[in-house]
Length: 108
Image (cartoon, rainbow, N blue to C red; front, top):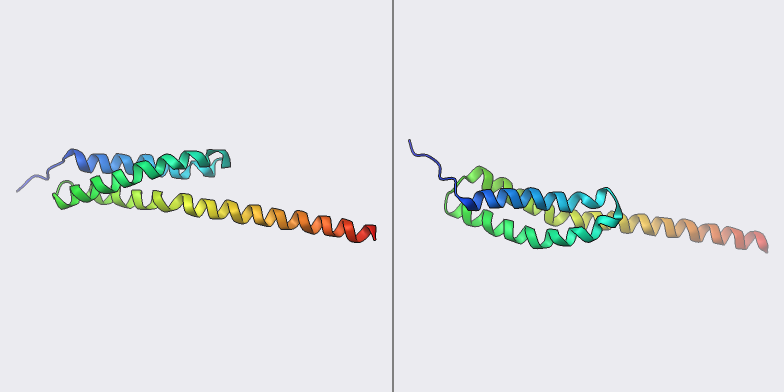
């Protein structure tokens, strides 16, 4: 029985995937952490490349696939969070403008 090679690239993809997902989800705690998701866009491509190379070299495929999936999720998470915060800001702006309109109508 042949042992699986556990090279450094699959471990790197796995670790970078975990770190990327943490930085991607930090804006959930506060909108002030949104700037930290920029680090995510540096780590994610590196993790993807490491994972793909490890997958091609048939290193530990489980860690490689998990690292690739985490990197892909970490890439799209800030985009979805930005959309959420933008929708929330638009809704707040509309509510404020409606309130201003009501006040203006009451003055007439």
